[in-house]
Image (cartoon, rainbow, N blue to C red; front, side, top):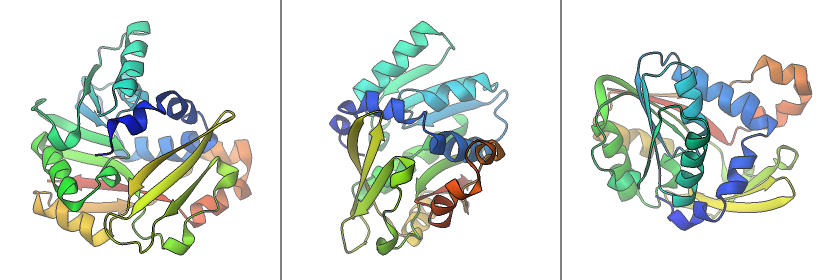
Length: 247
């Protein structure tokens, strides 16, 4: 996992970035559609940040939601919002690579997690802990770095309020750097590249029987709000992708 200090330092800026059109009309729309109906289900939200999706999923009818994040500051923001507007969500500050037993869940979700593993060893530990918390009929749904994006295609996202670079060569573990804008503040954070084959091999090795990649989806409301052309550059070169795993 990334060092906790990486997100401790940018917790508030990262929370504000969730209000961007891109995150509302593509990220959230894609993620929630892939997750599907959570009514009556036990949900584990990994890399939950300040609890943005934890609260959305609870409002959509999840029987219980537990949010986990490595950052003390992110969990502090999540718990602060839970105190201000109690939803019955439990938040835990922990590294997914070293996750204690939290019980069994019907749906495990993560809006960006696996690509934070700094090494293949950490990626295996992370995936093993995800699988360990899943019910026999459970699903793991995540948004992830797009492993098919060539190194020469990184960049060109300025109009959407961010950009990204990758250390070359783009081999497993190579560092990806994101530069993002929240209001008038510029902040950055790091992720890591892994090939599609690496992800699929690790997930299969820890016990997932079915691994499926899903393209991003655009909310029709986003077209109404900004027009078709606004989104085209992003959708033609998607920096992230959906991933669904089943036992």
